Image 1 (cartoon, rainbow, N blue to C red):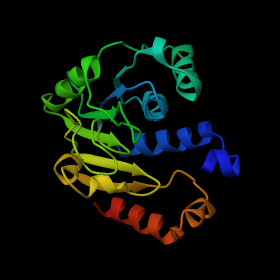
Image 2 (cartoon, helix red, strand yellow):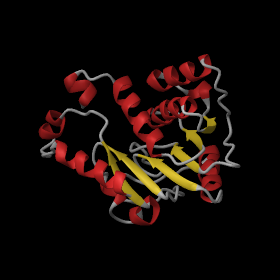
Image 3 (cartoon, rainbow, N blue to C red):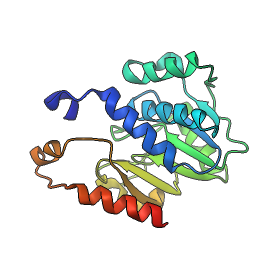
Length: 208
């Protein structure tokens, strides 16, 4: 709605999301990205982590990307960051899960299922972007398989699926990230949000 109703470019939101994800990652981070906007958030995070000397690896099927996510991949490539078609997680303190977002409606299969299973057995902290990959954002059902995150950084507002069904078992600690969505967007959805929500979250983050 922010892009369609208010003309806020998806690229802006993706940049803000990527920065928030990068600053929440601990130590050296391996970023695993899907081909949608969730993957684009991860690619933006990878660029910030690279700047800060904390990018262990980044994985994405670049040939399947379109739109803003493809633009993020092109920028990474232009600055010399190698994007692997398969996850390389050894030595990573944090794995950033940016594979699948809120639009998932069917069981995870094939390569993406394998990636999720690899993340779940890696033994590292896992930071999920918006929602753990494989989790239904409305019902909290694990659709075939889902990432078991240490922390979920949910963008804008928490998703219902984080709090119901199997959501709590997969989401770990939940943090809310402000990515610059105008409060008027929330108001049109019948949700009253003020800056205090994000200010209180940021203070809690600093205190943790």
